[in-house]
Image 1: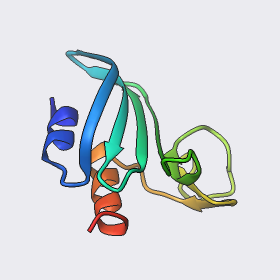
Image 2 (image 1 turned 135 degrees about the vertical axis):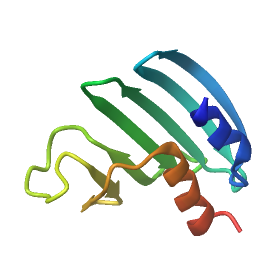
Image 3 (image 1 turned 180 degrees about the vertical axis):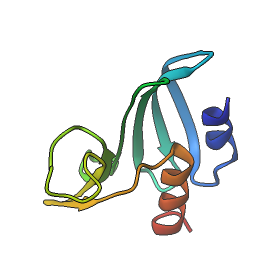
Image 4 (image 1 turned 120 degrees about the vertical axis):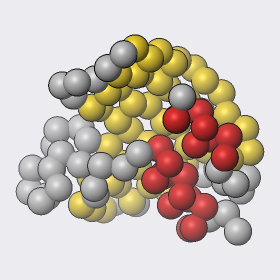
Length: 113
């Protein structure tokens, strides 16, 4: 599956735990804990099928402090990318809908050298 391949190929990832993983002809659902080389953790969950996609990628320090979270919970209607957005500190920002590979690439650029 492309999700696990992204994890296996990312230089940012130290190890990961699969809490849930199901896939079917037209979709998938997973929950993952991804331990990154810099000590931070990414909690990733996604449900996708023919009609909907719900996701949250929550990146935090090893002490549990939020670094950034991308999600599409239906709030922040004022954003042009509604419902897609990201949280950074006390700020909510516009965001295009990312894939797990996009998030890992972002983390690699920002935090892992």
